[in-house]
Length: 167
Image (cartoon, rainbow, N blue to C red; front, top):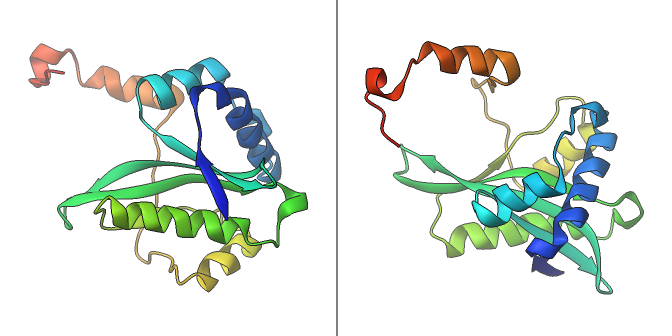
């Protein structure tokens, strides 16, 4: 597979893949990302990276990922946030090649693991991931705090002086 890392000029393309993924997952109404936000967080703050799968020079799939950290392993890992291949290019090995490329990046960077989440109803993706040797984590449930609940929880921490946190 041919692939390339995204550049700042690709923010509109990244957003188009995010919207296509959201449509597939029936979550279009949850996308609030903009090109400006992607530019800030991916390229200015360097909080994530994107690679594109290419076919005949055309971007046909993408993977957005970032580093996390395992205290048990004592080193970073890579978390795959999004993986998406355009429907008309599926079945040609692009998804597998994107994950294999991420595995290669994980190993080259000395990271201890590559992980991701998958929607419970997405059986085609689950079957695909199992075919790669991935296994679901047992005894773990993912939790998330966003929106008003996040703001309320943050407010309970008080100011920096009270918590002793200094950024």
